[in-house]
Length: 256
Image (cartoon, rainbow, N blue to C red):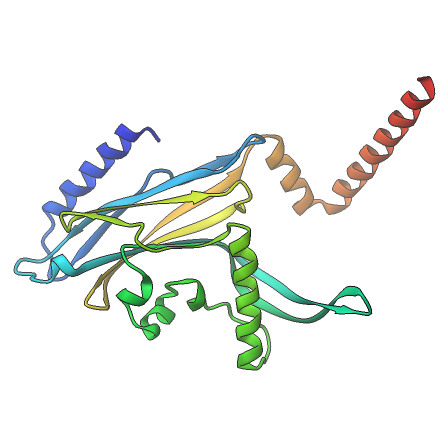
């Protein structure tokens, strides 16, 4: 979305917030794009999350407000396996399955999370990489669980799929806020949620959610749908293409 269009929407959001009267603070969030299309030449995108805060009359701690924005999705089950080196060979050892692991998770905040809320509040609202509730399948020792969670967080952080972005939310005049989150080229397709939290004196006073869809279009979408909905046909086509390319290479080699 062009920058001037974003500012126009931001002005509209501010106008709504300005004329809203309520007993508690209200968040009016917006996103620059609620649908992101991935083509063959997709190399990442930047998502702008912005909005306005309106406070009830007589609020004195508005200047102490903090904003946390959490972008996550799509949620799916995943098996995390640990590698061990035995006799010089790396093999799969212990493993743990998580039922609700996000494929992408980014948390942007006006200050470091630990300076905004306590650990209990962070756990409840899943604010921060080490406060994710991944729902392990089956019983598992707490130490083992922490080890596998740390492994999953480290793996996805190195892949630029998990991000902690402190001091990245800008708040203007204690009313308008904005945050920018970069999406890598490897971002998974699916349904996402952008949750915005208004925090005053360590308490979550307001929260709002915007839905975002990331989808493939064109040939990439056709291939993805074929692999997911008709695996047998997808496998036959893949084998046919491999055989054809191998035969073509051999034929050209003999002609040279």
